[in-house]
Image 1 (cartoon, rainbow, N blue to C red):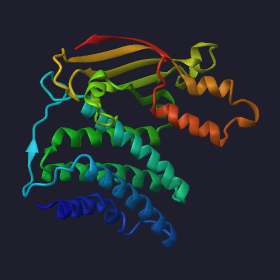
Image 2 (cartoon, one colour; image 1 turned 90 degrees about the horizontal axis):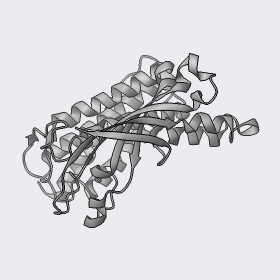
Image 3 (cartoon, rainbow, N blue to C red; image 1 turned 90 degrees about the vertical axis):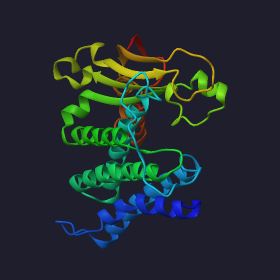
Image 4 (tube, helix red, strand yellow; image 1 turned 135 degrees about the horizontal axis):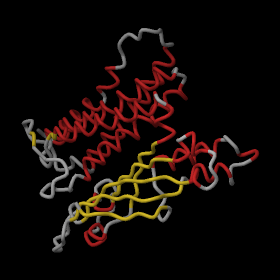
Amino acid sequence: MGIAAGRILAAGLLLLPVLAHAGPDPVAVPRGLQWKNAAVIGGIGITVGLYGANSWWKDGFSGSFRTVDEGWFGRNTYAGGADKAGHAYSTYVVARLLTRGFESAGNDPGRALRLGAWTSLGVLAGVEVIDGFSKRFRFSMEDAVANAAGVAFAVLAEVDPRVDALLDFRLLYRRSDDARRGGETDPLADYSGQTFLLAVKADGIPRLREVPVVRYLELQVGYNARGFEPGDGVGIDPQRRIYYGVGINLSRLLSDTVFRGGLKGGRIQRGTDTVLEYLEVPSTAARTYRRW
C-alpha cells in the first residue's frame, strides 16, 4: 500500500466517529448544532491523522493487517507498561475535555458525554487499526483494552460528582536521560519520562474537607518505567516503579488564596483547575517508590 493511499485510509478510519454520530438522535438536534459537533469530531480526527502520518506512520503501510501480543506491564515488554498507562490516560483526558467542548457547543450534558466518550474511543480505535496496516507497528489488543478502560473511567468521573471530587488522574513528565542522549523531543514517545499518578484528595471527603491544612493534602499512587523506551543503546537496568506519597492539592489551595474575591469561579480559575486536574506540577509532592 502506497504512502498516499495509506494516508487516505488513515483519514477515513479516523473520521469514522463523524459517521457514527451522523445517525438519528432520540432527541432532535438542530442542524446548526449537528454541524458544530461534526466539526469538532472531524477536527480531532484530522489533527490526530496528520500527527500520525508525520510521526507514527511516516514509514508507510503494508498490504496486510497485522497484530502483536505486546503484553502488559512485564519486564520484557518494550515500554514496561508505561505505554498502556499512557493509552488509558490519553483516552481519559480526551473524553473529558471533549465532553466540556461539546457542552460549550450547545449540547446538553448527557449528549456531550456520549459524544466525548465515543469520539475519544473511536479516534484511538482508529489509530490502533491503522497501526495494524503500518509497516512499523501492529494492532495491539492490549492498547485497545487500555483505551476502553480510560474512557470508562472518564464516564464514571463525569456521571458521579463524588468520584470527580475525590480522584484525579494526572501525568508528571520530565524528559528522560535516554531521550536527551538520543535527541528524542516528543514527550508522547518518551515513555521513560512519564509518570502516571492517581491522586486521592482529602477535599473530596466530606469529613476532611473542612479540616484545616488536611483539606489541602492528597494521597498519591503512581507508576512509571525507566530505561525501556526510548532506547539509545546505552546499557541500563530497566526498572518498573510503583510510587506512593503525599501531595498538595493545588486547586484547593489556590481556590482559598489566589482565587478569592472577584477571581472566584472565573475563567482563569476554571482553566487553572483543568490543567491541574490532568497534569502534576513537579516538586509538589513527597513520593517514594518500590521497584516491581
